Length: 424
Figure 1 (cartoon, rainbow, N blue to C red):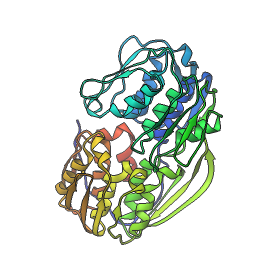
Figure 2 (figure 1 turned 180 degrees about the vertical axis):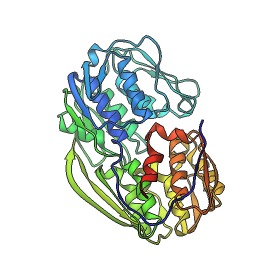
Figure 3 (figure 1 turned 90 degrees about the horizontal axis):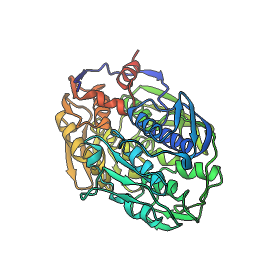
Figure 4 (figure 1 turned 30 degrees about the vertical axis):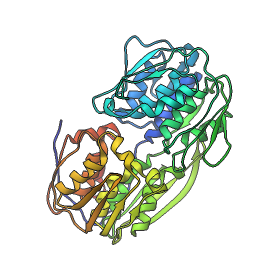
C-alpha cells in the first residue's frame, strides 16, 4: 500500500485531455469477442487492472489475446480452466463471466480478492437459474461462485428489481445459449451498452423502453472500437467545475445516455457543459465534452440520476463540499454494495477533510461551504474514494494524504499524473 500526499496546485486552468478507454465497454468487447468464433479486433481497451482481470480469465478458458487481437474457438470450444478463475477486484468480470458460463458446458469456480468476495452475488441467481443456468454462491450469498455445466438451457422472461446493467448483461449473455428467446426487464436508468451491441448484430430487440428480448445463437467475430470512459473523465470534469475560470475538454468520450448522469448533475449545480457528438461506435454516440467552472450550488440527486451517475456519487460529495448549500443524495442504497460501503466511505472522506456531511441509509447530505481543509483519507481499498479524494486535494486549503492511493490503478494507472497535467 502506498500513501500519497497531494496539495494543489489549484487555480484556473485550460486543458484538453484524452482519457482511457471505457471500462464497461472494454469488458463487454473482450467477452463478446471471446464468445464469437474467429478473430476479432478490440482497439482502445481500458488499461486498468479490472480489464486485465477479464483478459486473464478469458485466456484461462482457451481464448488467445495478443495486443488488439482476440482469437477464440467460440464458446463451444472453450476449455475448462485448470484452477479457479481469479477475477481480482472486478465485479464486472465476475458477474459477466458468471452469465456466460452459467448456460455453457464449461464448469468453473470464480474467485476474487477480499473486497470482491464480500460483495453480494445473490441478485444473479434467480435470473440465471430462470434460464436453466447453473450457479451457486456461498451460504452468505457471496463469491466464490460455482458456475457452468448446464445441458438444456431454455428461454425465459424475468424482471429484476434494480437498474443493474451488470445483472442485465449477465442474463443477456447467458440467454445467447438458451433454446429460445428470452426477455429481461428492469427499472429505467441502466447503461444499455450490451443491448445496443446485441441489437447491432441481430441478436436482440427492444419490446418496451426497458424490456429487451434476446434471440439465442452465436455472435460474429467483429471489430470493436472503445471510446473514452466518461466515468474516468468525470474526475477531470469535477476539477474544472469546482474552479471558476477553469476549462477542460475531453475528446472522443462515450455519450451513452445512461452514462451522462454526472454531467447532468454538474449542469444543475451551475457548471457550464458542452457535449458535441462527433460519431458513433457500436450504436453508442461518441463526442467531445467541455466543462467550465463556475460558482456551484447544492442540489438533490435522486431517481434516475442516481442510476446514471452511481459510480460518480463519491465525486458528487466532493463537488458538493465546494458548492454553496446542501447537496443531498437519496435512493442510492446500492452504494453500500460496491468495493466499499460507499456511503460510509464518503462520509469518512468528507469528515476527514474537514467538511460537513450526514449519512442516511440510502445516501448522504453534504454541507457545502466552498472549501475543504485537507487531511488524511482512508480509501478502504476503493479506487473511486481514492480518486475523489485526489480531486478534493486540487482545491483544499491544506495537504491531502491518501492511504492506499495506488488502488486507483484498478481503473486508471496514470490517474495522478494526468490530474497534475491539468495545470502544466
